[in-house]
Image (tube, rainbow, N blue to C red; front, side, top):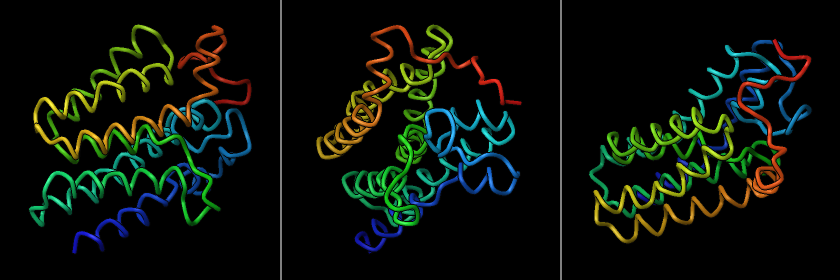
Length: 199
């Protein structure tokens, strides 16, 4: 059963909320504009708040739901972590879209909430506080996901889960490498900024 759930999680994670939402709302394909990232921030800038909200909710749920299913089967932390990692990798490397996906932050947040809701909410709060302070989505994500493995290790005392979450953080930092350069150079986009063709 755990192996099946890992595969199922990857398939669920491969569904792109951004692409589907923008198609349904007749908005521009997020892969063709701005950062070309099929994620909520790029959708916000080029398709508006409604599309971004649906995208964010979809990406969160596809991380949360597989882990919640794992909880229903009383799986151990390491299996729950692997299920979450599979959903997360599905978002990054989706089988339905030529293995070209998003950066994984919202799906990772869904995984965190699915693993342990209170700790997951703490991670979300960390992101929100960072966003309010810096007004930079990528920097907020980097801060929150860097701290997330430590939060979970403090609560669960599970070394396998800690290692899995560190791997997730590593992928997020890798996918944000261009953002990191722009943050250092002071050229990274602000959350409040929108392109001229945004709503």
